[in-house]
Image 1 (cartoon, rainbow, N blue to C red):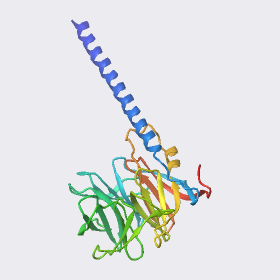
Image 2: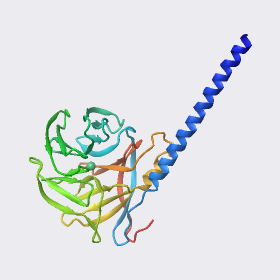
Image 3: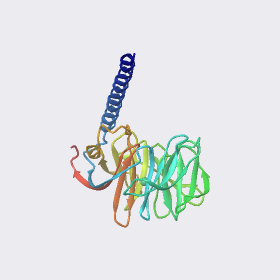
Image 4: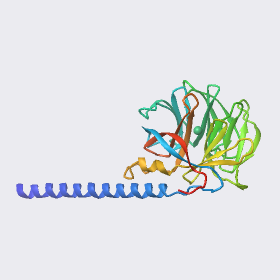
Amino acid sequence: MIRKYHKKILLLAVTFVGLTIFLSVYKIQKAYRQFTQIKALSVIKDPDLPNFTLKTISIHPHDKTTFTEGLVWYQGFLYESGGGRGRSVLRKVDLLTGKAVKSRKVPAPHFAEGITIFREKVYQLTWKSHTCFVYDADTLEKTGEFTYKGEGWGLTHDARYLIMSDGTHRLRFVDPDTFKTVRTLDVRMNGAIVNNLNELEFVEGMIYANVYITNSIVRIDPSTGNVTGLIDLTPLYEKMSPFSLSGINMPNGIAYDPETRAIYVTGKFWPKLFKVKIVPRGVSGGR
Ligand SMILES: [Ca+2]
């Protein structure tokens, strides 16, 4: 009787261990497939333009559950907007730990998108609900909101205006007090429009933009809309484990600290955030 009981326990234990191993292998395979697919996304190349790549200065933890749609550096902290319906969020993040020191949930059905901080206010776009939320940059308390037409993707600002992308090739320069569009800028690379402009950052007089479904950032001259440089993000994958169980998604998120001139980049569900230097890869293009 006791021997029969032991056999049952042993069978259950073997089944449990077997299932655990099977699920672990399945998860690792799935993560590896996802990692490989994202790493293989196209890189925008043009032999007539300056081509850049990234030199990693330091690597920091990033919240693997955040679907990064906006990234900003402000007064010693990263600010991040995470997308998803019912899981959208605005986070004020400590660089060294990757943990939020403050966060605000964005209520469904809003899907949070790009953010920028201008005159001590955080502006946060939403994807399809035509709403820009405004928060106090210190407390993250909501202080107002605006409406706009079309979709909201990336957001940054120059000395005077907010600069917004909407998934097309067109950037809008927006009055921060009224959210009215004061001018638009069509982005072109050697005459051809560049669609799917996503997360943005204004860096030393140029607009940097992640381009959706690619591993590239384009550098845009705000006076002409011309792409003046291409940045290949693929070296970053060498610094991340393909076996991460989080299932990373495409790169999105550029932040700039004007005091130290540091640039930070990450991606959707990425386990890491990178402090980088943009370095020439040669003007003739190619790897
Ligand atoms: Ca940004």
